[in-house]
Length: 122
Image (cartoon, rainbow, N blue to C red; front, side):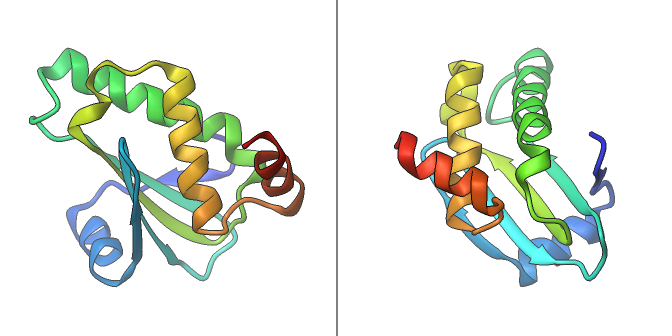
């Protein structure tokens, strides 16, 4: 991910959970808060409720790839924490991408052109 760093520490996740704004859909929960810098920081959380380590790793990779492909269209300067819900267990990449972009659009993090394209396709 070219323009994004990772949230790795527990206190970073807690800060985003505590002070960030959250929106959820069937597959994902997304917390967002401004970080007063020129970059985004992304944290992905997949609990053991989703499945064994193979399944959790696959879900993490799907979310990271969906974010990576949308990264150019996301406004900079935010901490984003994405939590996978149990329904993520068997879904495809296309559904993951659609779900992530849906939440980004609701949080108004997509730049003008990408947001308009997403609205026309919906």
